[in-house]
View (cartoon, one colour):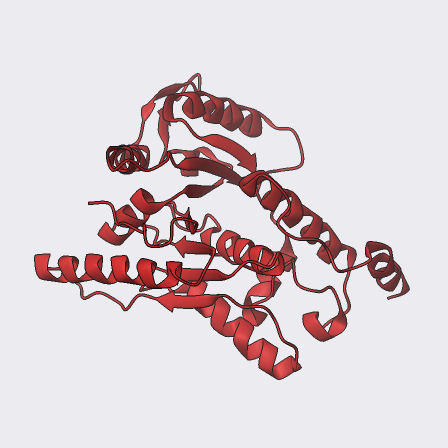
Length: 293
């Protein structure tokens, strides 16, 4: 059953989900959270991946770095679900569903947006999150390996031959939401690690996504490129949206930081319909600092 959040009808629930691991779910989730915080919203985050806990570790790293640098970094209210046992009984699942519902209801009372990061496998909590999602973001590495969670393709022509398991799970959650009288979920498939160069693979994957978007009712957006700075942010819990200064970064800002920040601004605009924040930095000053270095 879909979980009700009618006590706070203005809250927006954004779910970042994909059964394929390594697609950048936690990176997308933390960047959205910080972008919305910097826009003045009250943001809460939930980590449903009780084993990997990448999202939770990211936020823990951010809090630690903030203390070490003596700088206040905006951080969302965060909840991480406890790890399940190896086998989940019907009683365990019932308790988990109740905890999920009460967590959403409690957070909805004092937050504008709740962002939920999900595990990279089919789990009952993930299915609950899908049904609760006002916006569903599915990060996808730009390859047929990752596309396989959405659809099957012909090995000779690369034309779509049918939908795959994850697409059917999302479709079921959307039908459940519709039956509960909820607005339709805005489903966005995010093409991460998209090459800047034209290639046959890029074209074929793009054609397949265009076909699947018509079949499944999602829209496609360009996500985050493969940039070293995104990997370097994680141990310090930083994002490309944070201030580009040496105190925050722990190093001199470079053009790579500026480019990543512009890329995230475009991403937020594509995902949420409009820029969610204004830059505090003067880019020309950052570029001059970079050139001087």
